[in-house]
Image 1 (cartoon, rainbow, N blue to C red):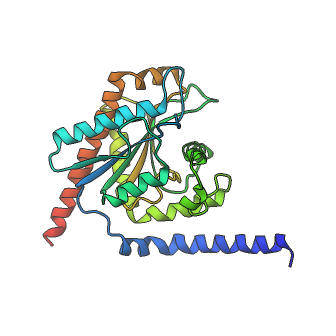
Image 2 (cartoon, one colour; image 1 turned 90 degrees about the horizontal axis):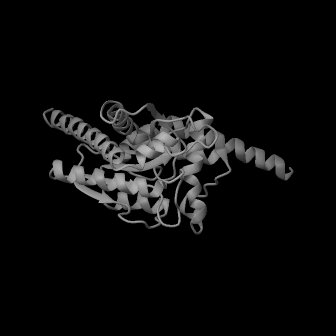
Image 3 (cartoon, helix red, strand yellow; image 1 turned 60 degrees about the vertical axis):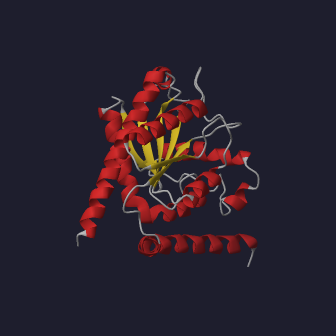
Length: 277
């Protein structure tokens, strides 16, 4: 048997494994990892930082906008919802590897992980709006392109394949298997994501591009409901100006805060009802 035949058989085996995992893993994971009943600790992750600028507009850098919104969001939660512990993956302009962000959330037993970013569409500067992502296999090339761009930061890390279980930026199969890790928390992640997009429309008066699914490395190893929020496009001149302004950052942070408040109330109510049974 030649090498190409062996490779094809191995690939076929991987596909069968992925299919079986997709069928069996949700129930297995749900039994192993019980989703949190209340929200007592939230980890807020400002995307990029340090040597990783993220995307850039004419005058704005993603890493600075993400950090500003993250800190404002944490401040709103601390001031208005007593008893919730707010933790940050970074509070200044430093580089934090993606796997370290998830590990930090897991180590601190976080009940929710919020990763904040800005979007970019170089070939379509007219595109604008917010998007909130949860882990899952995306259905469009545009979603995959967002994931590729956000995941590309691992090229700045040392020995990244060891940190991400052999993940390859150029191999589409790598993106499929990672969606299995978050199945146990999919319902909660989707619920929070919907709250966020609803608040962006109602509170910040932004154009919502909806809740989407794609495989982001910063989310795939988190053992709690997790979302990645694209707050707008820096490739769009008007949206860049909005996101780079104090007013825009305040409204975006306020919208996410209100979504968090709704999500916590929903989880608390479900916990109370469950305790009565």
